[in-house]
Length: 191
Image 1 (cartoon, rainbow, N blue to C red):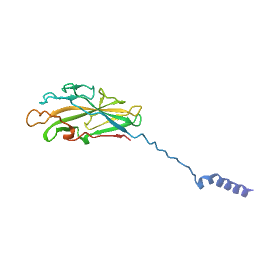
Image 2: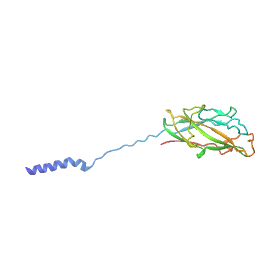
Image 3: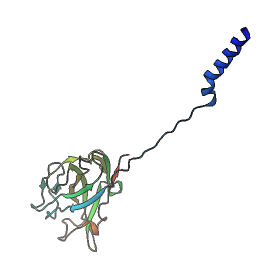
Image 4: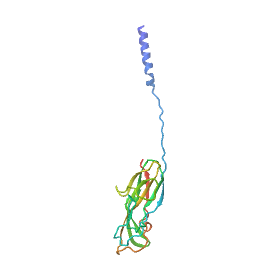
């Protein structure tokens, strides 16, 4: 009888731990959420309007309040719309290849006007008024959170200063196309 209890004890012990001795198996699943592509549209280009050839007063397009000064009333902020994106997602906006200045020029002539770029943002898609200045940190990039519909507006403005070696700037139309080129804007998710 002693021996049968002992064999039964050993058998019970082996059966009790046989599940873990043989191992366990589990399945794990994986998911990934693909978010909406960012789509953009230039709603309005920057226009500093009519300016004094001496640039004695600095032509300014203010991105925070939408005001213009020293532009003969013809100045217009530039607006780039994010027309679709992931709602409430943070994005990084970079412009002009890491420089906060660029030059406007005129066809075949050396005179240029330096544009110090400022960028702001406001939720939704608008073409008037100002927003929050996102360029004040380093002047070449900023962060924006898209609104609940995945939209935002980037507002471009800044100041002009002259670089003429002959005094007053010659009367002409100065554009980024004849200067350093248009300002490239890159918008990417902060993932």
